[in-house]
Length: 104
Ligand code: H2B
Image 1 (tube, helix red, strand yellow):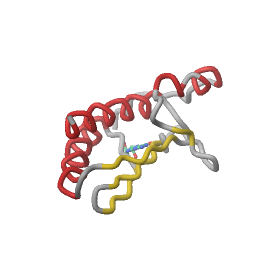
Image 2 (cartoon, rainbow, N blue to C red):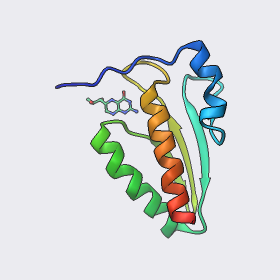
Image 3 (cartoon, helix red, strand yellow):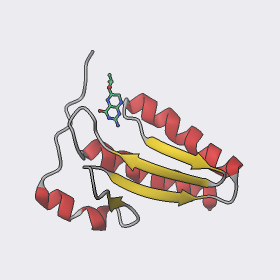
Image 4 (tube, rainbow, N blue to C red):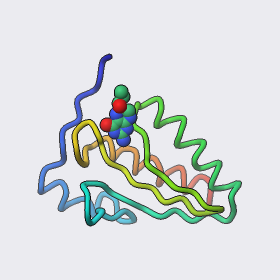
């Protein structure tokens, strides 16, 4: 299978993550980023997950997530690379856009 190469972010890139992704944070005990999304109800949370799932599968880059009612806790990491890559940054930015589409 053809897999697009994704290299780990450098120390400088990690340090700059806060400005690229202000609403995300770096997980303490593993190399990953996380965000809690809060929607008004389960239907909006599910619509968000549906939008993201479609694109994530097209990109072959899948979120770790946990949903209860309107809440979606997301963790992003590139398992194949063992850490945070630009694929995670890309998907995080897409999720922020999907969130704003649903909340408007
Ligand atoms: N998703 C994430 N988040 N990280 C990966 O390394 C990854 C993935 N690898 N989805 C893909 C699938 C790989 O396992 C398949 C075989 O392409």
